[in-house]
Length: 177
Image 1 (cartoon, rainbow, N blue to C red):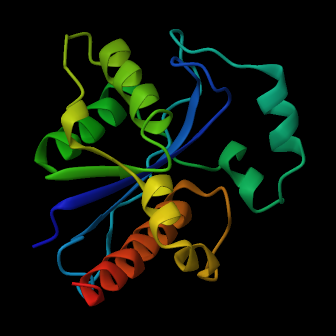
Image 2 (cartoon, helix red, strand yellow; image 1 turned 180 degrees about the vertical axis):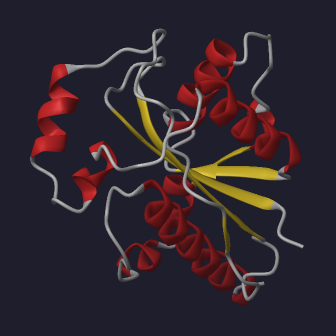
Image 3 (cartoon, rainbow, N blue to C red; image 1 turned 135 degrees about the horizontal axis):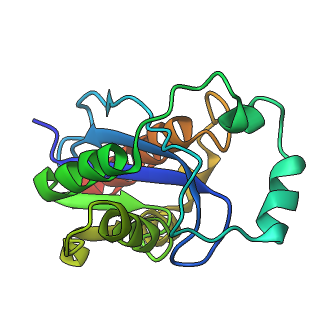
């Protein structure tokens, strides 16, 4: 059973309370790199996020991204309530053995703030589960060369790619034992 959770978010800022555009999560097992990656539906929180911060530089950055990546702003996207989005992420974080992100200092910190802001309760992000994709890519740099499939800066596509990279790192490290 997949016990590791890969998370990727797209935001409109870089502060701890950045406006969250989308949340991508996939399940995989770092100890069994041949197992299938299990995608969960991408989460698009509603755009009205009163406790969030938007920064102009990030807005400008988004305008330079591909049209496919900017679909995160489309009016046709089905968005969920902030409490529903926060509850799904909190539950997944609770269930995971390890939580991977590129990097936890960004994604996990912002999601911790998001959960606390929109579930209206003092849920503690399980920081002891956080794992860094960047650190592992520094251990086995060849995994950085894995071709990207899908749309870059789509939270789910990014999460899938990062999980595949961690599978490569795991395979490499196991071959060295």
